[in-house]
Image 1: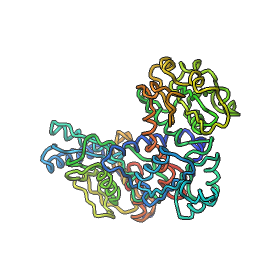
Image 2: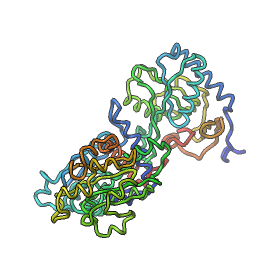
Image 3: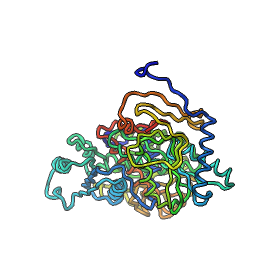
Image 4: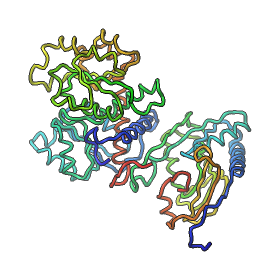
Length: 317
Length: 201
């Protein structure tokens, strides 16, 4: 694996390898010394052109726990705010001899473009409304753990149905999740009001519905997406109240979930809009598990990309 | 067969001899520790874990007390990670706190000593044992680090280019240790070749 730009870069074997190692990496949190020497001497730069708390912090912790030198560069307070182009910023940072760039950018395709300019490995930490592959990996990791509680031998998601509900148009998470969940063998149902269905969604490897109530009873997991009001230029739905009635995981809908069905949300949540407080805090809510999984999954991704020789042809046994 | 031709593998320990060696090591470990109190056996995957379990079983039969056993994967602590493709990482499971315990590291073959060095580093991140001992089924020599085993099943003088293979029923369906002439390589080349499933490193 040279870069991680899209969930489509990963086949079932690669996903399983990343998730299995994430299980091992998750034990580091419980150790007296939270440090592994695997990436000693490697330098990772978190290049964040867009605000982020959990993704940036978890990449930073992941790199540090693997003994890499981690540097954070954010657009605010850097030359980017003086008008430097993406290309010049990326080339400047890469010229300092870094081994990997973790890039978040408001423009779809920016990490891919960066990977064409430099030799360092590139990880997409969220690009525009395009993809967020490590979020999809940590969602899959969290769901796999949840499903394994009742089926310890579970290896993929065959026979499982995952409903992804909400603002599909502005979500980067949904694209990565659809690709990853589909590779894992899950049935994916996308649920959104017609105004928030992205163009071309019919070509995605997923079913599409505009009726949450018709879908909710068949899901083994519901993944609620944040209504991204900051990215909305026009009126995608009449009122917040109307959105909640049609597409929110309300207390009433909570009662219609299958027993043991998982509730996920990539955060940050709009409580009371797409998810009720009852649902967010329910016993089967995995929202905090998702956050906790972030570090372990990103450690695994960093190790898979940087753990071997520079001409990394993938993981060998 | 002349020296330069490839040599068929030769059995140096058969099933009975392995069992006998392990029983002797179990007694030695108990004697050195004056009983089973505070002992934790930690195997280095894959065959070290199997051997640790066998040793613990033998020791519990002698002492009548169960001995905790675990597994310590050393992949992330190897000193040659950057020389090879990204390696798959195995499973680490430490069943009890190793703080103030007497940890016996168990492995199948002791060769360069680099694996043991990595294991000592890994142990240091998991706790502070009172003492760490090393038990190996075969010590084949060619050390590159100042490391020695406390308990050895068989000392086996070898040439650097010979291959020692430990096969155990749990992982390979047969219990035997064999030696064969391998491809020519330096002692260092052999050491950096890494753990090759039951062979020397």
